[in-house]
Amino acid sequence: MHYLKDRGFTHAHAGDITPREVYEGRRVLLRNLAAGAAGVALAGWAGRDALAQVARPGKLATLPGARSAVAGALTMEKLTPYGDATSYNNFYEFGTDKSDPARAAGTLKPRPWTIAVEGEVKKPKVYDLDELLKLAPMEERIYRLRCVEGWSMVIPWVGYSLAELIKRVEPTGNAKYVEFVTLADKSQMPGLRSSVLDWPYVEGLRLDEAMHPLTLLTFGLYGEVLPNQNGAPVRTVVPWKYGFKSGKSIVKIRFVEKEPRTAWVKAASQEYGFFSNVNPAVDHPRWSQATERRIGEDGLFQKKRPTLMFNGYEAQVGQLYAGMDLKKNY
Ligand code: MTE
Image (cartoon, rainbow, N blue to C red; front, side):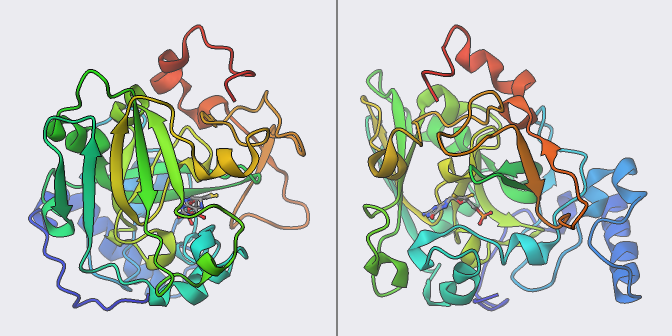
């Protein structure tokens, strides 16, 4: 919304990789939308092909992705409307109200952009965004995102497995964790004047979590580049963890030996642990995590949904935590 369509994104993997039926679906869907049908996800479509739900909102530069073959990557649930996914955000660098990022993130300049990949790797490198965009084929992944605050969304992200990047820089034997550092530039991010968090926003994963195919290096949503408020131009999405583990607007990826001190662990370690796997059986000290409110579905009589273990990705990621006490390692 805050940068123009002609910002010069060039993508090696344009339309030709999206199956024809998906395009046909999109066209019909767009026609329906133009004719006044409400919402992006039309009943009946979802069952046939989750991707057929994905209509481009036409706001930003296109970024198509091929249907992902990664297990668990295509949740068959109704998508959260684009308007909700891009106006109800947590991005404290632009303020702490849900509506702040959409209003204030226009000052973020997602180009030019580089990411420094460094630390315990044999091939450290500063990647230009254009190089990252071409590093691996773009995939569309429909993930549930569960925020620690008790709400969730279903979003079609575009990107590729972070493992694609990790393989290329060749972690050394000392690399046990990966740290993700968000931009911290006062001239672009008005929220940095507040001391709610110790800037920059830092997040981290264990190396095996970072290498898991579901961990997505993310450049877009809804077939377009990321809006600033969702973490342009590049962020992570780790679908089995609470949303705050997915750092936005990343400028540095560091491979380290010791567990990183993340921004949320520094702010309140009794409330936000390093792992932060979605777990309905482990309550936040101040509220239950057993249920969630799906954004876009609220209404007076709307029942909350039960929260699923590992946000519904247990079959794919449960093994990563075999033998661990998840109450202790929250
Ligand atoms: N990354 C940065 N740099 N700053 C933030 O405040 N908020 C996190 C996460 N990443 C946050 C961040 C939280 S709490 C959530 S729920 C998700 O971003 C929200 O992502 P979305 O706005 O794209 O839904």
